[in-house]
Amino acid sequence: MFRSVGALRLFLAAALAAAALPAHAAGDLLVAPTRLILDGSRGTEVVLNNIGAEPATYRISLEIKRMTAEGGLDEIDEAEATPAEKTALAMIAFSPRRVTLPPNQPQVIRVGVRVPEGTPAGEYRAHMLFRAVPDAAPATAPKTGGEGVSIALTPIYGITIPVIVRVGDLGAEARIGDARIAETRDGPAFAFELTRSGERSVYGDIEVTRPGAAEPLLVARGIAVYPEVRRRSVALRIPPEVAATLKGPVHIRYSEDREIGGATIDEADRVVK
Image (cartoon, rainbow, N blue to C red):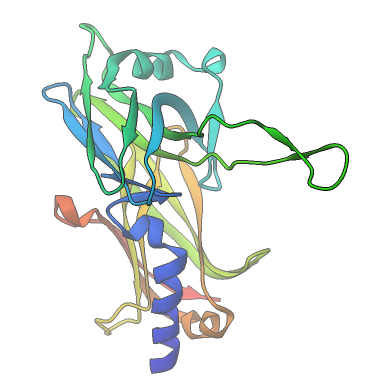
């Protein structure tokens, strides 16, 4: 058991790093925080940091993403956006929209919101995209020692974070469904469903423990259910040698982010099969 728990911790540290850290990373860009909530009374900031060895340029924009029942986020064309999604794009402001970062030099992006009078109560969300701008370079070059051309492909990295605007006094609850070990194409996963009710999203951390034990068997950070879905499936990948240790009676706790107090959203005893 000791070895299994240790292996699980090492695995989750790698597989769930994006959810566990206070910053997102893609390529050489770090972005913090990873989630913004605004109520219209004041603005906030996002800090970008280039951890690479060369200067890099990034373009910043807003886009619409919708959660699927599987927990993924589909990008939505603005022409297909709902009135609430278009309102989110219109009310969120930020500056600057393009930055060039020297190595290890942070840059602050100021983010604000202007809620038009008469805006219906609810949660409005857009996703802020930080996309790398590749250096200007010829796309093709002559092959050495032969005819024709060779094509150089440059990967373009991007990070998105949700920007949430809450208008009015909104509430939400979530309930944990049955849990099981599921086989996915990427290997075994600890799987369960979260059912949400209310006018806003829920967001928090999952801890799985044995009844009566204080040390968690599994921890996952940053599990969200957005208002466009009432129920989403959660599948947390685990190494095969650990899957068997999670079977049997467990206690699952879904709690708010630790930065806002870590209050319990829901907890349940389940028998994992």
